[in-house]
Structures are given as structure tokens and as C-alpha cells.
Image (cartoon, rainbow, N blue to C red; front, side):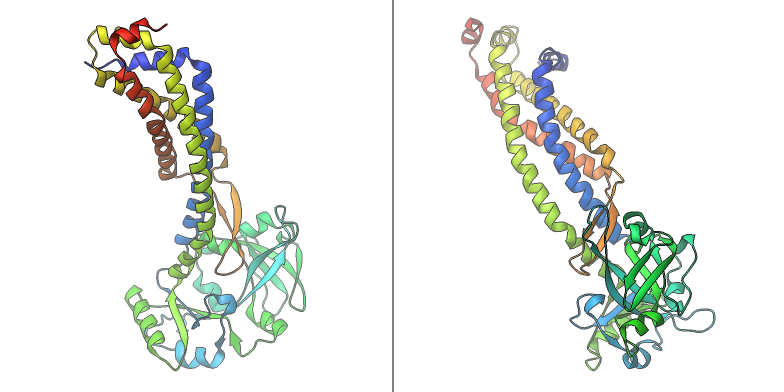
Length: 389
């Protein structure tokens, strides 16, 4: 015969002060974990949902990132641009975009000393290939001028990069004439310029940083990658654009591991708090336990009853923790990429999986904290329990 759940819920309500304090402690632990997981989820979502499925990024072999890569103009014209697997636009021009990539340091509210941002020099074909990108404000830069358009995340976080703002880059000052927004979140952390003007400022007329190529289909994309990487004369690396972005999710690993470590340390303390609460409950309700045994409830029923009470207590703490973090959902922040050495902005994302992990973590705390007190309650002898005050 099982003990009614109402018995446990009533006891939690009667001991409201202890219940609130223990739940709050568990809630803070869960809040730390959920915050970290939301951050990692947001960062992963920003990178993993970026990149065209038929885009291939070509860089120098061993370069690792566009910033440290060099593709000679002769390589682009002779070995990449006119391959049969490359798709062409309505005018018959190959969809192959040679691009320059540099960094600029701009101060933000969070980092007054400045953070590195990706600056990308594009040819007209490069903008054409990014049809998922649209102007949110202003206009596109004019070719041959020191004008820039910035991603929506950059405009929101950096005062110098707002509409009409100016920043020093290369040999002069660049004016922000537009703000763009891309359906691929990682692009919104970039600044785009005219590639020819950027090449003039840096004296890089005969070399690019990378080449972005669009193929006819995904099978052709893999075929192009195989062709380029097996040609030992070229010494270049080719990979799907999505794979390049996904590599950058490693930037969140340190935060994930450190945050999880802190949450585990806090969880140990929360386990002891839950255990202390349940041991106190067992001691205070010793005569009730004896009475339940007299009424015919088995040791197993008592063990399950007190164990469930601990789970209820921890679940309440888990809900409190999730509610505490809920206002952070959608909050925009940034993290430095270990691949590009620039900041990427993203939004914290409390997905159902993150919430489920937080509540599961709370139940785990309750299970460890309630098992021994519940076992202690179940082992009490009837006469011994009835004699206790």
C-alpha cells in the first residue's frame, strides 16, 4: 500500500521556511547550469545555422582561418574560378568570390579597450552570393570609397559602428553607411567593405585571404573539395562553409566546462542541504513514521514516500532556477572565436533541451540528497519510532 502524495506535499507546505531556503539553494545551482547551457546553446546555434549548403570555402593549406590565409590571384583565376563544378549566375559569371579578411579593434560598452571584429572586403559577386543578407538600414557601400556596411549585431554593440559612425582602418577613416541583417547569425558580426578599396589600403592587389565558391549541388561541392585538396601543386584547403563555422563552436567549450564545474561544486553543497533538510524531516516525524508502520504501510512505501518528497523539493528548486534565468533568454552577448580571433555576437537561447537539463539536474540533486534520509526513515523500528518525541 502506497502513502498518498498529498502527505508529502502537506509536509513541505508545513515546513515552508525550510522548503523555501532549500529550494532557493538548489535553484541557484540550477540557474548557474542553465545560464551556461543557454550561452553554449546560443553560440552553437549561431554557428551551426550559418553557411550555405552549396558553398565551399577555399583557403591556404595549414592556414586554419581566413585571417591567416593567402590565395594568390593566379591560383584563383587558373585553378578555382572556372572549374566545371562552379555554378554560374544569369549573366554566365562563375559564382566564385575572392575575399580579403582583416580585423579592426573597436570599443564597446562591455569592452572599453576594444574587441577585434572581422572586416571582409567583397567584390560585387560576393554580395550577390549572400542573397540571405538584406539591408536593415541605410544603403550599400559605394565601390572605390571608404564606406562600410556593418552587421546588425555589430551596430547594436559598438557605438563607432552605428549608422553614420566612423572608424579608423587601413590608411584612413571609414564611414558606416548601412546596416545589414543575415539569416546566418555568424555573418551579423562582420563589417563589409569594397574589396578593391581595401586592397588599395593594404597593398594586396595580387593576393586574397580566401575564395568562397558556390557549386551546382551538394554532390558537386564535395567533388570540388576532393579535386582541390588532391592537387598537390595548389597547396590549398577546401571545406564546406558550414563546416568552417561549426569549427568555431569550440570557442564555447571553455565556458561550458568551467560553468559545469562550478555547477557541480554548487550541486554538492545543494545535495548536503537537501540531505540535511530530509534528515531533519525524518527526525521530526519519527512518531509519524511509527504510526504509518502500525497502520500497515511497508518499509518500501515509507522509503518511496520520503524519496519522492526530496524529489518534489528539488524539482521546486529547479523551477525556481529556470525562472531566475528566464529574463536572460534572448540576451545578446559576444565571445572571442579561437579560430578567427575576433568576437562573434549571439543570443542566449533557453531551448526545451536546456530547460530539461536544468530540471533533470535538480532531480539528480534531490535523488542524491534524499536517498540516505529515506533509507533511514524506512529502517526505523516501530517501537523505537513511537517512543521518540
